Structures are given as C-alpha cells and as structure tokens.
Image (cartoon, rainbow, N blue to C red; front, side, top):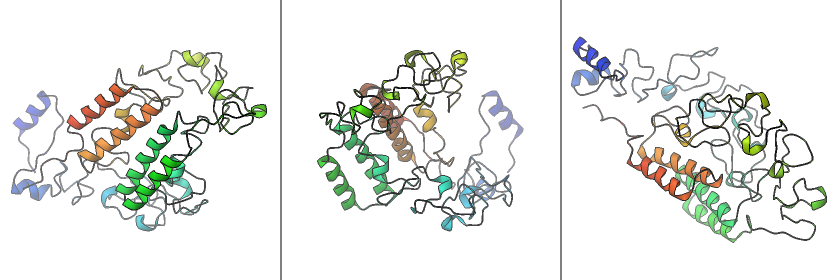
Length: 340
C-alpha cells in the first residue's frame, strides 16, 4: 500500500505514530486482518496482531510466524495443543504435580485438589483457607469469600467449571470458617501455630515467613530484611538495600532493588513489587502480549487488580470505584473498525 508524502508528514507533525486504516478494497487486499500491518510484512496476515509478537523468533529452531498463528510458539518438540507449557520451551514436559501444566510454567507447583487454570492453579490454591499469602491470614471471612467469588467467575468464564459447580463452590466457601478468627488457649492469634513455636504469637501468620531469619516473623518484624531501615521507611522492605534507599528511578516508592515494574506513571499506586494496576492491565495488550479480545476483557483485568489492591489495603473503596469507572469509560480493548 502506498501512503502519500503529505499524509506521512502530517502524521509526524501531529506527533502521532503512523497507522494504516483499512477503508477501501485496496486497503483490504493489502491488510486482510486490518491490524495496521501490511500483509507483505505481517507475520500473521490473517490474524489481528498489531504487536507482531513472536516468542520463538530468536530461539533455536524458531520461525518467523507470529504467535497468533504459530502452531508451535516456543519452538520446542511439542505443538501448542500438546505442549503443557506452550509459551516456554520445555522438551522434557516435566509435570511434577500432575496437573497437566508443566513445571516450567506452573505458578502453583503443589498438587492441586481440583481442576486448574492455565497457570496450574486450582481455586483452593488461589484462595487458600489459611490466608491470601503464606504469612498472612485473611482479614475476615468476607475477604476469603470474595477471593473465591472472583476465582469461580474466572473459571466459569473459561469453561473450566459449570455454572452449577460455580454456585456450589461459592456456597461451600460461605459455609466455611476460612478467615474467621479462632484464637484459643496456646494459640493466641488463632493461626494454627502454637504460641511456643510461633514467631509472631500475636499476629496471624500461618506460613511463618521470616525473610531475614531472625527471631521475628515478617508479620511482626519491624525490619523484615534486617538492613537497618525500618519497614515503614524502607523502599524495599524485604530486599536488603540500606545503601539504595535513594534509588527509585520512577519515584513510585518501590526502590530499584525490588521494582519489578520500572517506569510507573507518576502518582500511580503500586503493590509491593512496584507494579501499578495500569502496568498489570495495559490499555493495548493483555498479559500474554496479545491485543485484548474486547473491552470487557480489559475491564475484567482491571477489576481483578482492583480487588487485589483492596485486599492489600493499597487503595480504598472510593478509589477502587473510580478506577473501575475510568476503565469502563475508556476505549481500551476496543478493536478498530473491521475492513470493508
């Protein structure tokens, strides 16, 4: 497709990136999937993939096919439909916990008690009765139920469970005692660990996490990484960086030593890894680097992250509502008009 010099210059002057609109029969022939990439150079000419993602492009045995149309994305010995980690090379197909998700990409390596999602996690693993993290109990029963509610919804959307199973799982969650404080003699905080051996006898921490290996668990340790900087003042509370307290390139409050998401937009709230909701759910692409399947997919991602940020007490209810309203009002996830 030829683009006039005037049009090209105009796009530069406007400070906009050059995009190709599919509006005529000629445009349709040159860009069949209307993704703004000419068929002549499109690595998936029949699949909408403006990002041109190609995992195996630089791998041994890789190819020039984009991920959206590549039968073997990671260039290992198994095609996607037979590969237990289709995006990560793993010729051995090792699956220690037997959940059909390979060890190389399994985010929940312990043996599951039920059906798992694409990351190898069951609902019980995503929402363990003991707490949202291995050293932190649920704030209350409602927090646990909300987690299960979110998980069953996603499992149902992906058709991993039926609507009846979704309803039954939620009924069982509501009837459980998960998240209900149960202090008793010999276990002051009710976390299931006897006071005599509990590294935080007054703070529920069933996992007994102790980052710095001192006498206090993370749940009650005022300096979890033992770097001499108290948690409240430490920009990396679980990564020792006494000499790097001033190193925070994106000024998001998470020091460079522990910031998993550099380049956070100014003013955005972040989690303990330095990642904002906008970074977890970018407007253009999903977590796999593919264009969103639609606006609702983008909104679901934002809603899930908002829920997580609420659990972590990073944002309050009003902030959560505003973020979701902004996502609903945005055009993120919308596809361009189909070529005519």
